[in-house]
Image (tube, rainbow, N blue to C red; front, top):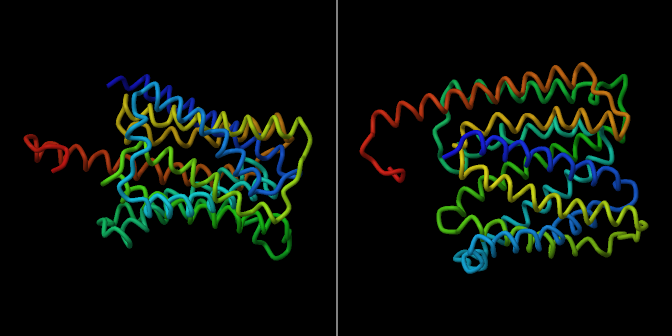
Length: 304
């Protein structure tokens, strides 16, 4: 284990995912979300296949035990991606990022409801606090006095995306019981590419060479980001790396300001701070419980 290397890889992945989102946002007025999903998924595949080949994981990457599970993971994930990309055309990048933080909070709730995971009072309180932070970010968009139909549509899209991303995480937790990580990564890119083609009759366009280059770049960058993210967990524990997800709001503020003339409002900053505090509390608490469990069961295998 090399914690510093793991942190560096995680930060690189977050940085690259923010670049990917910026590229998608830059083309949002030129192509529909389904077309953007196609480029993001299709052009990530060569990167992922090359990565699997270098690791010697091509056989495990192509082998599946639960094809229907991969089908549903792809269907949920690609729909989440589509709504997330759509929201980038309606809202500033920092706002989309901040509202998207609802996903990990919802994952905790769905894990309790769908997987039977124990939901302790401390964790539930932190989740509620995090969702309050998301509401703070959204509140100006929900004000009757200042309602903006376009912005409201963006809020709805990113909320749907957050719900579906949380459900996708629950599905992944089920898949990892029987499937290799390499197979989950590869088949998601494959199914996302195929599902995105279903949107072809709904207005795909040829946006011009500069936009096509940005869309291709979004796929390549997204593929590299996925590899960095996966590699980071080889060098450090998930509990150590989790807080660095929130670096995305800093990168989103930077890119939003530099490339899109977007300045985050006080509500976005305040809500983001609340969500990050709630996420930090959950991570800290889970780490403490993990340490206690480790002391109580020193001779047990990781499988328990």
